[in-house]
Amino acid sequence: MIKQIDHIGIAVKSTEECLKLYRDLLGLKIADAEKVESQGINVTIIPVGEVNLELLEPFTSDSPVAKFIEKHGEGIHHIAFRVESIMGQLEKSKSLGMKVVHEVPFRGAHGKLAAFLHPKSTFGVLTEFNEIDGKKE
Image (cartoon, rainbow, N blue to C red):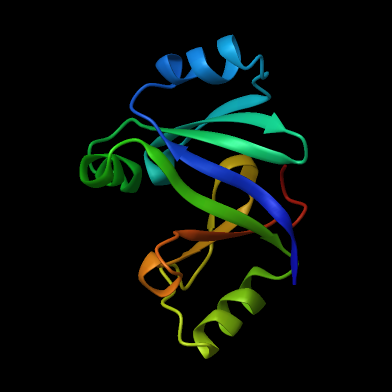
């Protein structure tokens, strides 16, 4: 059911500061940027081959990313896998005893359906599933 790694989310305090590394030093190009109101973050997408880096900059102090930065500092926040069926993947995860953060998927960046598994059940890695359902990408 896994199609590919979709993206790696990186929690940052300042996208502009972070771009000194990815854009200015490494020469990578920004493909897109958008505000995801439901998660309280600005997302900047940087393609690297077939996988995207997503810089996640919180714009509210109570967003999940802001809380992550407060607790762990900046750095890799999650890894996202593109799946054929997000509900099927969530059901399979639950049947294997994994803790699902989102019982109901939400719309993330680019309108993709998204849901997370809790890192306590995924060996310390916050794991996201993405499904592209044709509504927006």
